[in-house]
Amino acid sequence: MILKLYIIYYLMIFTFGLMACGGSISSNSAEITKFSEGRNLYVSKCTACHKAYGPELHTADDWQKILDDMGRKAKLSNDEKTIILNYLSERD
Image (cartoon, rainbow, N blue to C red; front, top):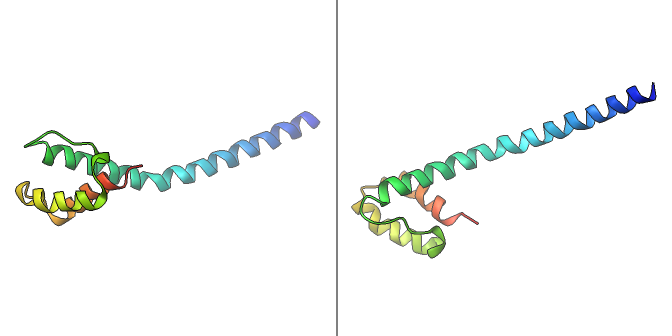
């Protein structure tokens, strides 16, 4: 009888633990998708003319200026520039 209670107790803890982890995974999926989209845009659009530079090479303000200038040459839309800027400047 006591063994059954321990098993039920541990199953409940395990189940609630999985539920808690599942919530955090779904909240990060949008960030992962945006990160992936930003990286893909950066690589496909920006490396057509030059190599890809590491995001850590510039500050967010520097990347904004670079994207404003180079974005015209690469024919980036404002949305594409924003997505790429987020990718380049929000990495830790």
